[in-house]
Image (cartoon, rainbow, N blue to C red; front, side, top):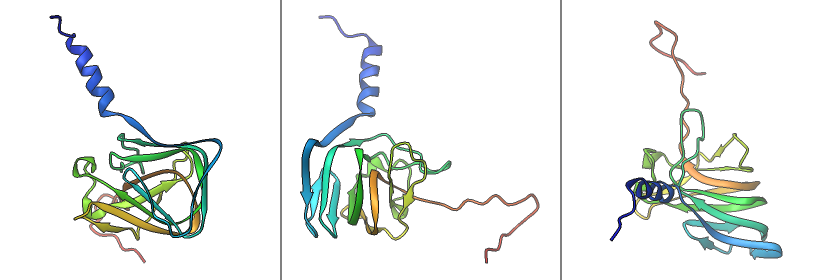
Length: 172
């Protein structure tokens, strides 16, 4: 029996390591309505809108490829992407995670991060996110209408480089 060449096995492992899964497909001309205060869970993402929301003309894709949230910080290895951003979401977002998806992001510092478009580099990181490390989820409540293009988790640090010779910094 012929064995496949080693590089083929390596290529398959690389492709599997950076996989994408389509979780939801709402075709052109159709709409998925999530009623106010209804919990809608698909995969490891939960939406609970505070007002009715219609999802249309989009696919929801889950990827395990981390994204850059800031020049120094990456997301966890779980990202949800709407192929067409969903506009006007108000309510609760909850993401579930596994320890092996943390991508060196400290579990106790996880926050929900969203932005409107995949070409947008300005992430909205909800610093009031709630965490449950036993059940492995993080949630946030969006009180302002938010466009959901991508959703992930990460942390945001304020990094400051001290001038040479400085030993402290004061923030007023």
